[in-house]
Image (cartoon, rainbow over all chains, first blue to last red; front, side):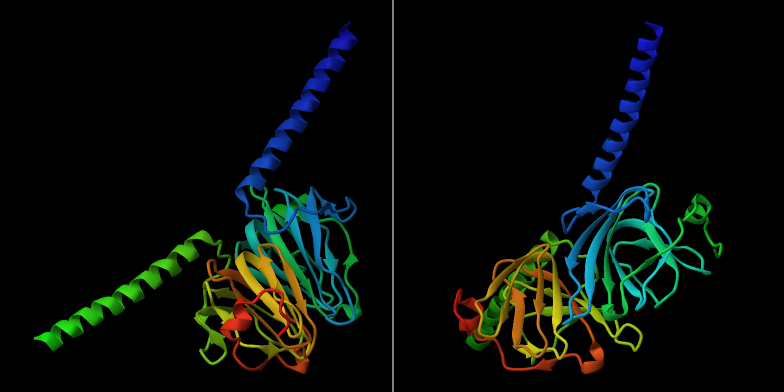
Length: 164
Length: 164
């Protein structure tokens, strides 16, 4: 009976955590202006936390340009990665960060534009409190799309003005 | 005295028209979600009505990609024009139109993506009732940016399902 009670109690706690995370996620989505559907959950091997991706322009041989939108839930971020022709980021709502290897972390908000040069390591993600909606443009895709690297550590994610 | 009264009356009518146009413009801006500042008024030789443009990514030799945002006030539209490497349009709010030469006019709304192939004539603009906020991406700018052509006539602007 004690074991059953313990199982019941643990389940209630776990359900409670899950439920409050869902409520927080829903509250964040309600305060942001979504232009596009949320899309698909990014793979856990390339992202910490929940990052949702929707492709808007697929790669082709006419435009050689890929466009998409990512919704980073609060605290979510990409791994470090590079793009062979660089990347342009356009923040459409929320708050987040961008860091280029060897430079301090930048704070991003609605209306900000960020460029990351070709073959330079960077990561991007949401602030801990507020999610971020961000469009991305990958130019000159004939050279490739992305190379995924190591995770962004909690220290890298939360440290201001330090060059990793 | 009669002449003075006439001048006063005409001024009041003109101010009245100007003022109600300004109120309509303000009302349209209030209902749209602006991500970027409105920018500068597009030149009258390339646009009918008021189209405001802000550059977001300037041309360079690294990305070869130009990005910007246009706010078309209700009824405003571009002239016909071409881009040597084509154009990608992303509608972030409002309502408008896009037409590729020889095809019917398309209706555009928030979240829509449009591609116009290289060296193909097209025009874009707002609906008569509601303005349109639209980002544009010009890829492969080493080939050039834009060639401006003739005005979009009122018939072309307002006709549905006719190939101009």
